[in-house]
Length: 334
Ligand code: PBG
Image 1 (cartoon, rainbow, N blue to C red):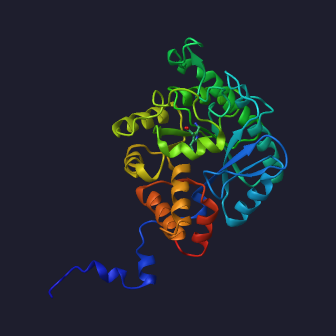
Image 2 (image 1 turned 30 degrees about the vertical axis):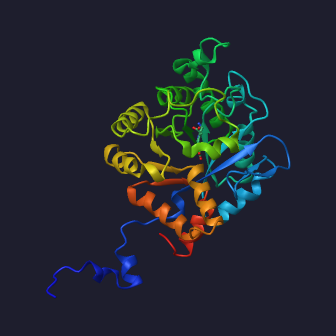
Image 3 (image 1 turned 90 degrees about the vertical axis):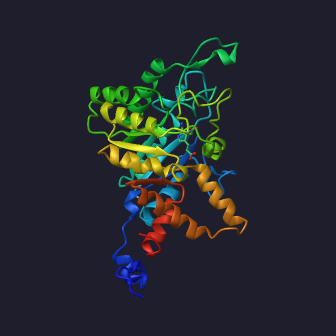
């Protein structure tokens, strides 16, 4: 056969395959999301996310230590408060659950990079990501009040930073929240604290297991009036560009697996680092498929992680962070 170009030449041996590999990964790109619950002595299995736990402030150290040992250098804190109310006051309480966790982590794990999810849904009695306006007695008459929510989000971010957050990550999808958070942080002397914006966040059924884990499902309606419609792509560029203009330092696309087209588009559109969040439903599908023996868990974890980096993300948030760091160390991916 007279073939000048034979792509298979470069695939013949492992050393060569690694030499020409286009996507290089490293544990320093990984962020592990952790759930912290009020109380003591808690290590509670999350039924819809086998292998994941809710920790209390006094027990989280064990997990943080093993993450660090595996080479994962950053965590994202989610809080599960005892008390919820209409205004989500636990979110911006100086002594709230995330604030307590931050202070403890800063003391015990000063090297660990602390990021917080800034949102109200875990703290509001109605489970929405902001405060409501409209009639209390006619539920469908209520909606999330965008502009009034901004001040609550800004105060939440400020309280996180005061308690020791190195970076804040607003996930509520209100218009103008990045600017509001940036302004309050700057005003209080935190001009150097970066904001990672969940800018391109879709209204997704993949968050189902998370809402069980965090008890944050909306008590009425859904999140479609603030999270994006998954039929849309150009709208994601609009969101990302707006947030960069408002001061976002990192842009996140969420979920990961079904939205890699958006990771690639955003990477070309903005000139800040891009994060991709492999959410709870993605985690649980892999765990469930593996438990049933339908798929090879380790290989699927490696392949899905590599696909996110191949699409262009610089940062990958995943409940498999510790496992992936191990696979990278063992040379299974990376
Ligand atoms: C809070 C928030 C959610 C997730 C991250 N931040 C839930 C939601 O928007 O309903 C989902 C994370 C996951 O599914 O792993 N607003």
